[in-house]
Length: 262
Ligand SMILES: C[S@@+](CC[C@H](N)C(=O)[O-])C[C@H]1O[C@@H](n2cnc3c(N)ncnc32)[C@H](O)[C@@H]1O
Image 1 (spheres, rainbow, N blue to C red):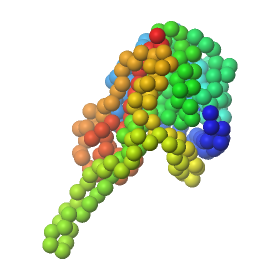
Image 2 (image 1 turned 90 degrees about the horizontal axis):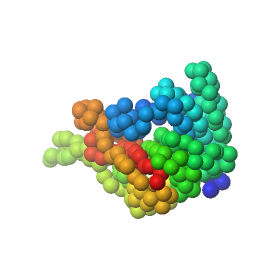
Image 3 (image 1 turned 90 degrees about the vertical axis):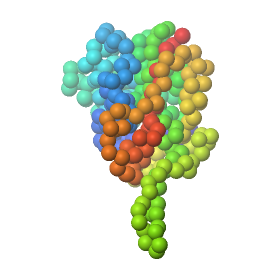
Image 4 (image 1 turned 45 degrees about the horizontal axis):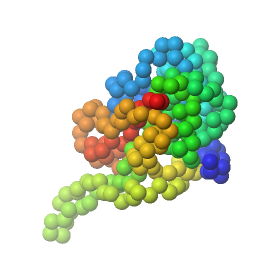
């Protein structure tokens, strides 16, 4: 666990909580990818116990409760997010058990207890992926399901470029293209700012997730690398955002893993 990074990220997530109210929550699994309503990765939740790592504003837990989940548990590094999630769930008549702690820490969390452990766009924030996935395995009953989504690792390695095509001494057209300007092999920490708040994380290779899942006793059932048909059907307009649909026409912006505890 990298205490300095966690402290910094915790402060920033407290400041960002309002901006992420229900933003990346079930049935949404990621950016420009099919939703849970289309993919059906989650099992029937009726009467089930679920646990969310990085529960944010609580909207995904609410979705689980709306789909019949009986016991709602979650954790988040941000006290602000925990309070928001508690309020949302209470207002909707659901009781929950939420822990204010990082996903790297398994303190207090029931072992061999849950039918489903999941994380929607939060797992990439861990400073110790192996410990976090090992924790998920320890919370699950045998045969329980672990589902998580995050940025596709290619996203961090590419950029968009718009170049002018000249004819004579004037620009006759522009050409938009995706360029590979990162390093897929590099898993070093990097820091960026979101609305003035510093956040630090690592980009990880697909094989890093797969190999750790296998090491921690999971059988991988599905890896989703898809762009949503509704995005593919859109006009090919060029836009320059990090999560631009233009990129999603060429590769998936998010990846989802579904694994089962052996
Ligand atoms: C994009 S949000 C996820 C939102 C969530 N899926 C929802 O339904 O609202 C990412 C969340 O991860 C949390 N987070 C960041 N680092 C964490 C860590 N090391 N351990 C636990 N939670 C963390 C943030 O506080 C934030 O709430």
